Length: 232
Image (cartoon, rainbow, N blue to C red):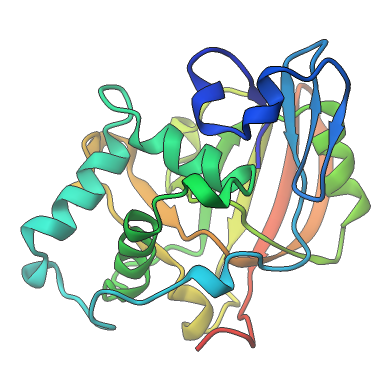
């Protein structure tokens, strides 16, 4: 969902062939340019993760029913400054590095997002990010079409708190049904950085691209949370 710089830190969680290739590497999941060390993430038209998904927690979890294990899953993911959990999880997913993905952890986090009872869900969420020219092109080409998220995505309810990249992803939920809303949860109450007003969107969530515009110095991409008929 965002351009990634391949370096000594990130390379550990990407396909091993990227470390030695001297030519452009193009797959259905990403495009890698060794000259720039940029890995551009493509938009998935098919959910590749379905065969690996499992619901490991109850379908309805109130905040008073959160266990130490559940809280650890949230804390370890949001505390990205002191551990590699965030980077490892998402880079493995983004590059479809299936053999190295910790599916136990992925399914715990996804199941928790989907199981938390939805309270105070906002109509709009915001995410700041850096996109390459290729990635902007992917969004433009898929306007009015659907795609599946290829990682967990952090959003905020406050536009002023977004990461100051060259693009903003605006997630619209006001017209989404309850089944679609299962894939997002407000988690800032248990996040390591509660002041960020964070919400998490699950990997494998179906979104529709509504519009792609450039305003002054930043791309604005509006997407809508959609129900996926293939989900249980």
